[in-house]
Amino acid sequence: MLGFVARRLVGSRIGFLAASREGSDSFFESSGLTERRLEPLDDASSAELLALAHPDVSPAVRRIAAEARGNPLALVELPVALSAEQRATLAAMPTVLPLSERLQAIFASRVAELPGHSRELLLIAALDGSGDLASVEAAAAGRAAVDDLAPAEQNRLVTISADNRRLSFRHPLIGSAVVELATASERRRAHQALADALRDQLERRAWHLGEAALGPDETVAGLLEEAARHRLQRGDRGEPDARCLGQQS
Image (cartoon, rainbow, N blue to C red; front, top):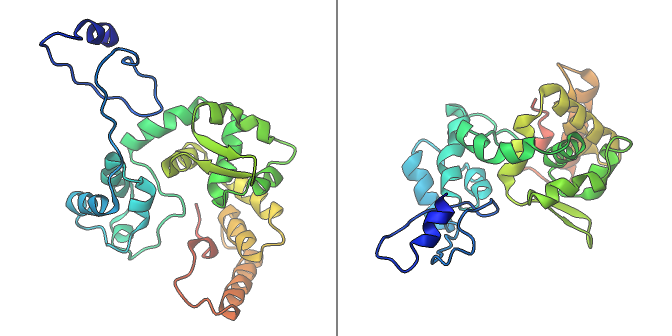
């Protein structure tokens, strides 16, 4: 209906202003209306908006701005789902940022429409975080295959590069939506599958086993300690990677 009205107003003295999200169906395509494409906010503007909307967010919490990618709504809404301690860097940030209800409504609906095998592969990819398609394939062996990602590609949720076999989410918050939609048991199962597929990568395997554990586990604790020793031996004495802390999802 709006598209019909817009086309009839071309050349008249009546103004018509509407907006649509990139990548979503629009009523206004080929309507002859003047289009203005809004670019993402730059780093300085993103930092300014985040500071204005959430002055309690520590400047050290750089992941919010990085994962928002200049999306104003994401900059305003992402801190909402974090605790006060996390916003002040007094508590560890979750590996995958949680979404507020408004962001879930935007990103999760497109994920929820996908077939089960597609969602399983996306969950593994989001929790893996490396973009390595080989790791995703290995973790999903026997249950899902790369071809099952076709619906996600068609819906412009992910990009798959055949050249270097990399998978990337078109926006980091799509990965967050995938994790939000999964049940706790589905997340643990995906972490366990990744741990099984990464036996030759001590630190990543230890972290995934920690996330898959239901409670304290001596074996996992031993692997985490060993991974920490490896980091120290390499001279990596900076802030520990969240993936090596064994936090629970």
